[in-house]
Length: 543
Image (cartoon, rainbow, N blue to C red; front, top):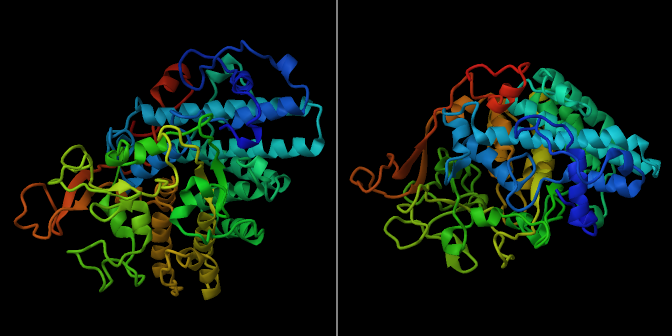
């Protein structure tokens, strides 16, 4: 990730540092196969603070434009949520993670593995050499803490999705890289937790605008909160999230929900950590994928109706409970975030153009034209941007403040400490009361009812942001949520006589079925390319 505080550094110099940091060599195109050094060497590079800053930039780098799968760029985070039951992708690539067909040769999961280990190798290179650099000691401590945090985030995600994984803490020789054993998931997470506990105090609470994109104490703590919640360390997680809240460094953005994700507001009060992009120089292509074809995009993503149905009615009740819900007019009287997240045929208007997906229309987005659900993503579309959709400079959000508030509330609830109205008002109700949303307050403290509300709130508030997969894995609900029939847009109010397309009893398009394999697909397979090289690796059960 190129960060804007280093935009004065030439791309050639940054690429030299990246080449320097990726030094493990092997015999495949995975994380064990690194390019030889041909531009700089460790013996001549690590001399001063400028060198350290270049190397730091190399650690953050994720490649721009058509970058591959990792846990940092917007497309990769979106793919995680699509795989977790929020929608489909035009070529079915993320679908294959959770539809029952996943195997060790799947290139998508293998890419998350290889790209993440490449970043770890850069971080290890930095941490192995930063101690030798002559520079300001406070700046050195900050840099060390942020790279330890960056590496911890990588290790956490690898263990979350793959289980037992190699955990190199230093640069490896070829022989070591090709024989390193796996570390248990529990031990990886224990290491990650300790790294974050030791690192966040050295990080600044806030950064100046010139340093946007660099990790802060709040970002490190937010990652720690995820780690502790995944381990059901509820009291510790609550205390971790409370530190972020008490720092007063972040707030729910009051301009509106949709505006949080626009380039003009990319450093707003909710953003705890984001991947930085810059138009023309280090841009991203997510808008090209996300926009409907009628608006210049590829309409690559199709949300499921099950996500649409998760949004409450304006009275704060679910569609199953609310008298406001009318199955013949299902999009009326709904949580405004439904429209902010989802494009709905003949309802959503973007920059003066109405989105149309009816099968009887001439729209290029009509459901009959491609493998589409009839819905399109609205959340990631930026009406303030009028440039090339393959050259978008808006940032990709990795963590934002509402996740912290909901994490604190869930941790308080699950810890058994009890949740008061004051806690509700300081967390979930801040989110629901934001201008443009104005949903009714949550008032129940009943654990069962509140648990359902918090889980639903996380799903709708954080839709398409890469959090839902993490949630259903730690909740243990992945098999339940991903082994069923998914539906698309409303096609008819007379389903009994409608024959043009398959519809359910309420007239929604019968779209795709997932066959998630319980007891197997909760973990991704170790990539076959890795098993071919390293005979010490053990495949996950079922693959």
